[in-house]
Length: 486
Ligand SMILES: [Zn+2]
Image (tube, rainbow, N blue to C red; front, side, top):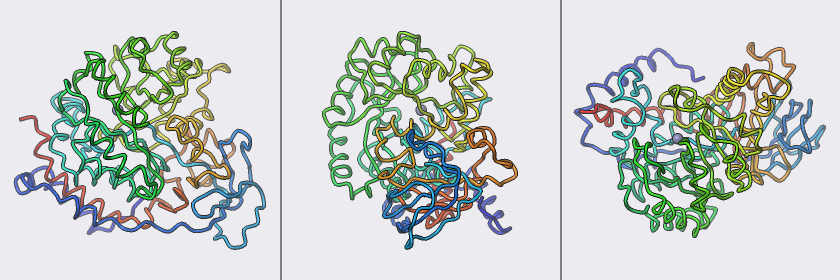
């Protein structure tokens, strides 16, 4: 955690006050400049040669398994050796004794553009519930706001051990917005996919901006150097099926043109897919495939899950939000998906009404499943299985299994260390239970993404916490006025 002195606390309190009241008039008409926001990013910490020694390795590589006192050797951003007593005379030693060493977490669905809207959602007044509120803010979001929000979210995500994020951007308002969020992902050092989506309150009777999608691919994703080799591109589809009207819905004909355009560019597709019978309908329309990720598994039936398995389509669950659905909103079907052999991953969805604590995502999923399905030998939702979903299965869902998701020689070095001797984890005897049942972000001792150390002991490395906070406060001071429905 960051340590705050008294002056920081006072300044923070003042900023909170002006964000909600005073600054709304002063800043409401002034959109921040993206170039200025972009210029404030610090250069990333360099990639060096490291050897992590004597850690309890959860490799998440099925051929390596667990190594109780192992080493991981990293050079030029790549894992070059995993095992015991590795010789690495030129490497900087990171002592891992007493720690769990594992791949960083892979989040597979997170709306980074709105994560600055924290504490504006109210469960007691549906005019301020998540959908209408973020929709109102969304249409006012300028590129600099999107940049700042994405950076703010990623900063929090890094501190919980997330090293890969799927930025599910259903508020791509134009080229500058896409560029802003891709820049934020690049500037923060994280790995991930940017999924280009339509703007909030955009027209639902027109196909998406495929020309700008192609432009985005050309500008950012042809030469890997443009994103430091860490990012990829996809699209997030607008909702299908009437009844999901809060964000608007498109017809299957328009979806076919959107999805077809993405597929012509070789880009994967993701879709919020909780409604009943939607998998049947997608299959009927010939839209499913291994390049499709669905989100929110609430109502599938066995036949639909068999279809998903046969098509290689994956499903992402966001348990924190899904368990909050009303009684008629379905159930979180992780258990059924695993039983059916569907590739299943975990995600945050949004952090407007929550936080990025990825341990909590696994924990809620575990507890909810036991509440709904019960305990027993046959229950596939074990703590180990949840850690797999949070790492290697997430990587598979994003098509990144050759790059990340396990401690495997040749993969990029996305690695976290978790202190096993913190009070809430000690004495460490079962690392899977420790991670899912007991851990919290302040147990994360080190976060390395693509061979760069981005966080240590609760503090970002080479990333200016104060600037990120200052800028998101500035953005929120401008946007706060639009939180009101009037
Ligand atoms: Zn979502």
